[in-house]
Image 1 (cartoon, rainbow, N blue to C red):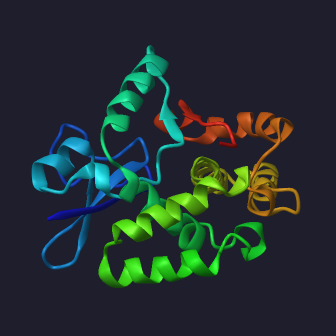
Image 2: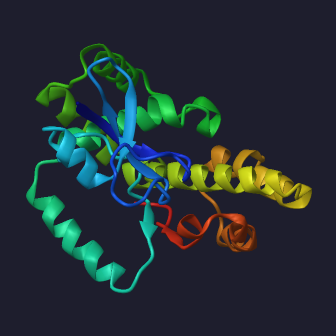
Image 3: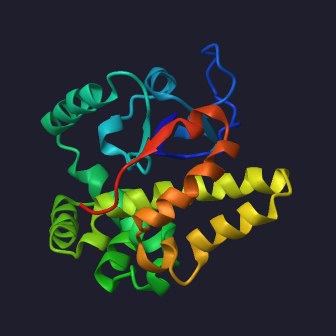
Length: 228
């Protein structure tokens, strides 16, 4: 198998590997493509045990959703140091063009799309790869963009989108019309996430009580702040 990306999944998604846990309750998964083209899901160890793919080179769309635990900040600094020792430019470039040209295509009234990045994205989808020259150009574009169009901010937008959609799912199961309307406005409203690629502190504060409807692992996760 090959690992094609790390992305969000519903937290009740079954894991491919028998690791003592049947589901990927964190909402994060490595997407592993079998020889017949079908996709299965697993955690990091599962991906490492079943593939020779260099995981530092695949797109990772989940970096803005953090597991809350004792010593988390210390662990994040340690992990950041390890990551910086590796060349993950390719992962960043693929993640960036995929966010702007696919995953967040309806954000900012469609203005995230950019013709140069769109061409790179089509080329990546065709060849499943990028040249070093393409990677460097994509990262140069990202570096000089406004903060709202930075990789870190778009990753945070994508994480909030995931959490808001999962919250709506559980509010629907509980027939909570008030909560559904509130969260839907945060996501799709005129002053919402899709319009501005940002939420105000007041909006984030208002979100908190509705997160109690989420399963524990998602409810106890932290989201990175907006911006670079």
